[in-house]
Length: 342
Image (cartoon, rainbow, N blue to C red; front, side, top):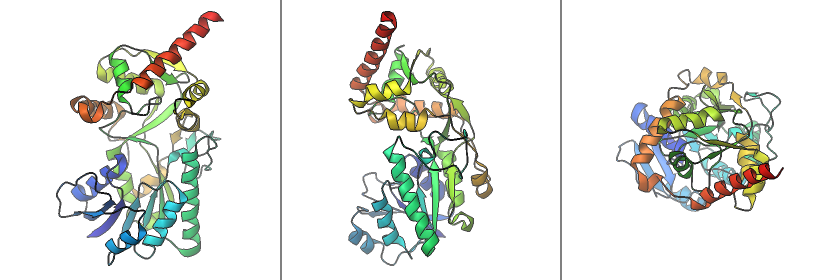
């Protein structure tokens, strides 16, 4: 039986991968995290309770263990992947680093993104940090043979959240509530830019296809669905699932970035550096190693799964965000006033 160690393992994308390995595939899985989310009992799922930043403690707890794959989902800065390199060099046959498709050049020379598209994002520090992590790991692969695989997810969601372009610090619920109340919702630009959404169960198919796969070593793969939608289609699909009429209010990304800055909304990064740009992914590379990868949960189904869960779990998923709600009203009021005064 193959063995995998997950650094993290309870997030949107990692939890789906863990479930697939344990329930559908012949893997034994260890989760290395602080143990804040209890595990479901399983003879193939094990907990290592530790702070990954405490190297000495982690070394003690993984003593005598070796893995077919170490899967990093919470590495955001170079010092974190440098730590992983020290911990797992010689202890794993493969180290899979989760980067981000937002690392691809913004704006790209071509809307069709391949793994060969240049990495550069002057708008978002998060993306630049991911690029730096990739560069460190690939250098270790080239110079020392460290068995790295790079994974670049795009916008992946699960049953606990609705994917949106513009939302506040507390997630998507306040926008869903605005829709249900018949209030206008802000959409960046004119809503016609193209975007790709991936349900986490679909992502897991691609990811597990790379695990213990010799052809994945030293390579980078984006893992996304095949369904491409405009933001107008995304918001309209959400409204249809709610059974309400969508009232879109279009605002330029530049205006949103300026208007959100003093409130701590980083729309420069998340919009100008990511969601405002049309992207369509060429998924042929991942499909060569994971032929079953594709959109098995299209968005019209995925959003129903998410809404069923969110509406039935109010304490977990319906966190009010009055500050963002008031900010949306203020942006709309200000722009409407400006229209009248011109």
